[in-house]
Length: 489
Image (cartoon, rainbow, N blue to C red; front, side):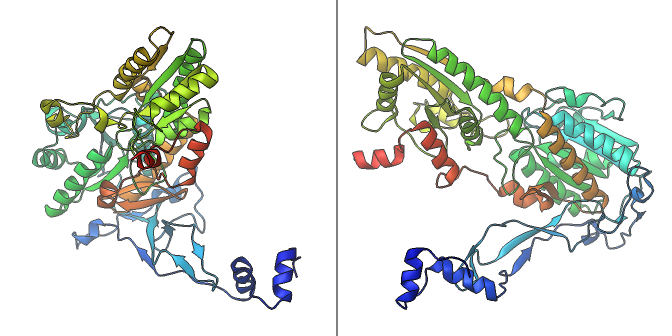
């Protein structure tokens, strides 16, 4: 029997019930426990609407000299990935939450494939803004199709969705894409907008493409859902898969998107530069604006990595400037204590504080998103106004750094390059197995196939009740602006 602490021993001696933790341990020592029901998300397959579809044959990896398939190498439909792996047990040993568990089909090669390599014509397209790793994904799709499955008809669609119907596709091969992973941006070029469903699917049909790999963010994934649904409506033997690309890491369900870790690494360098500038000035403030329209993941992780940040502002939580507990009061105290401060703000934070004209309220970009005003430039102006008003004869400097386009344009780092390879190969295995209308990505570090529609609707926002956000506040010592505002009312 394990040694009991003095309070536990006293409780037992007095005939009292042991604490809940001890009750649970005693229960687990003697009993097994079971999970709540598991709901497996159905994954679309070409055979759902092509009743005469038959496998094209065994997987060519059987004869690949670099692979030695053995028991467990091939994945089947009984291999699943649980969405939630951390649960809480009640004292009786039952799962307290959630009421049911979601699961997804595990990604990987299958024994049987539904596309003959000689008849496969694959199209690859990149859409939306730039992100580190886009060229790596393209490269790995080309090399994977070529080397793993013997596909020789691989094409790149230039200039995003509009390229399907306005620009002739270019042929791709491993020799051409050999060094693409070392380059930032996308060699295939990209654009926003240009989504014309009928023209796109007509072009897919006219070019004879039967596999389509779509690389893009949440807006691009919503377009991919429509393409998949139209392909299914026309009963075409065309597999459609999405590969999520968002430097903000705002795509839901999956652990993270490719390029995110590179973005955090580069953002930390910008924060370091801002810290040096602020520390080298009298009453200096270093202000860094980072990507993050609706989520503050880059700002949060870069703040945690840097440890030089005094205040981190993200879209998920409000902040205010004036009054007790506001940003200006906090910075005033920081400058008195240290003589400098560093503020990191995500681009989507504080948008409700910036005055807009009627035209600005209605303005949208080509993807249909509201055009954000520059919160960094606005905050810099407000800080200068405040200092001139409160300390008119004292030195003060704000150094504003916006590294957005520097971060977006760099090649992926080693970790993201590896991630890009895994996600590209998983996408290939899925389409070859006849699945369609899916996204591939890691869930709890295991790659899975997720229905496109689910990913297009899911969001990955910072949970400000989570320990990570509390960790940020413990590092920066910034106020809880929401509570401060409530207390001041």
